Structures are given as structure tokens and as C-alpha cells.
Image (cartoon, rainbow, N blue to C red; front, side, top):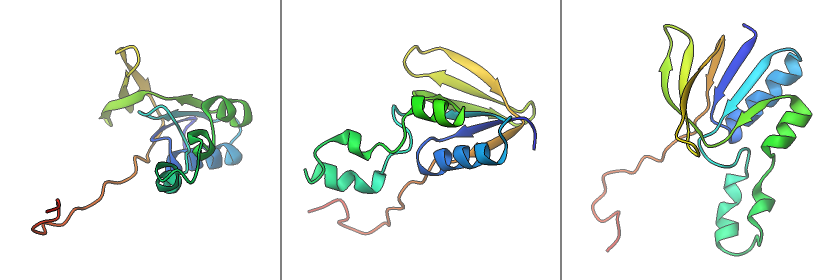
Length: 129
């Protein structure tokens, strides 16, 4: 492995990977990119928040960017959407969703932890009555 790892996706897999990498290598530069506003949240708890069992959305947040920086020295960038991966030059293009600015970030190692999307089978009437 090189000295710089860029991780795309900051929820379960990405945040866990970043913390684990830090434990294995204290000197590695780790950049965690998340297109949303939050990282490392308990997405399995969302139905409880929607159903008003959990009153505060903040109780679903397991880790905050500033805590990841202070505790693990990980550069967390929320609202940062990767729009292109350039494997030939080992870089990614990132759009800052707050400013609209785009820039490139190089990497030695790249982890893609963007989660999944449900597969909706082609069943007649699946959209409701």
C-alpha cells in the first residue's frame, strides 16, 4: 500500500475502513469523502426515527467528522461527491456540493464503499394499487 488512501463513501463501510486503516498505520494520509451531510450513522435505526420511537435524529449519528479528525486524524469531507475516477492517473474528481467547486484529489489506494441500492423485481402491481 502507498501512503495516501481515498475512501469514497462515509457511512458504514467507509467509516469503518478509515478507522481500521488508521489503527494499522498511524502515518497514512486518509481522506474520507461522503456526498451527504453525515457520516457513520445508524441507518438501520431510521424506521425508529420515522416512527417517532427515537426522538432525536442526532442519536442516530455514531461519529461526527470533527471527532473522526480529532480521534483518528482522518480528513473527512462531507457534501463531497466523487464525479469521476481516473485510474490511469490515480485521482478522483470531487464536486463540493456546498460551493459547486470541483477539484481533483490523488491517491495511492482507493476504497469504494458507496453502499447498495435495492433490487426491485418486475412484479405487476409492486407500486401499489
